[in-house]
Length: 386
Image 1 (cartoon, helix red, strand yellow):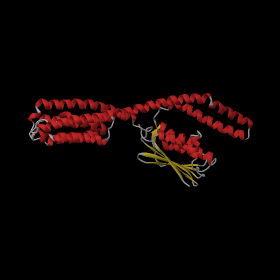
Image 2 (tube, helix red, strand yellow):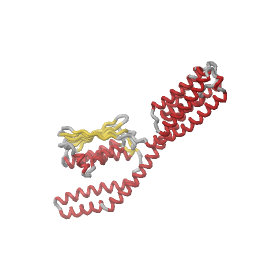
Image 3 (cartoon, one colour):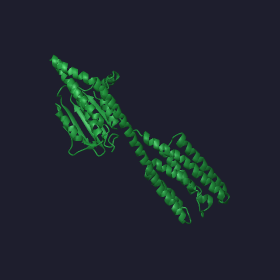
Image 4 (tube, helix red, strand yellow):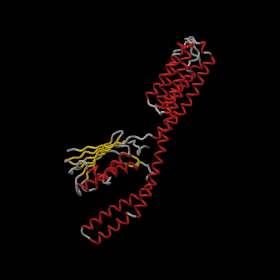
């Protein structure tokens, strides 16, 4: 029987969505301003002088209605999907295309005027630089194509639309990236503070108990001596963790494959890595090595001391794939869920939790042939960005 399970991390874009939300609020204000300008200018110049005045009033009413709808949808209902943004652009192009029909082929100013800026900048905010550039090309191209005579001011206005869209898109993406990095720094600082607190707790309690068990085990001898030896090993590991907690914010690159190669010093462990180097931020490498180490600890605990185990590394352009395999009896169906229900969260937190925090996936395959973990972590994961 084969049991498969998968843990997948879904990207968190709270910071990016917050920036986008504020940009859409600003666009709502812009819509009101450019709408008032377009309607007021058309009324001042005289809609009755259009070739089709009734159609002119209808187009202005449609502009008002669509602007109100977009403001409600994007700010109150917070709907900002790609379909709505493209529909906004299509409406702007449609109103612009109606100008020669409503005003006559020899018009000087289009009916929407600067009202099309709202759709242009909405595309820039939603789709970035390329979205702003594409919308600018469509609006500017249509404006020029339907004119009988092209004045210098018309070319200048369309040129400003053409460069304004990409610039706003670039600024929006830059703000989103900055917000994301700020959130990362805040989370890292909070993690460092929490680790410092846990280190104090561990030092005040657990380490003293482990030291006592090690000393008394050596005095008693026999099986107690082996228990004392294991307690001593755990004491060393915990002290190393405490000493390293101050470096939690250090993201200096560390070579991953060399760190994995050291695991071959364990009895029965064979490590196979490709040629070359893979540099990732130190915390990411530490977490990956800890995950593999946790898997090997499980092999020792459940299969036996010195049981054969293999660690394989595969380096792809966008991801790193690590595989840990043994030839033990496998994990019985439901055993992991039962352990989690009993409060033993080793697999859930030591393995899956670490991989999830790195933005990767953890896939478990187990059966009578043994147990195999496969970890796929993006090289530009939340912990690896930089």
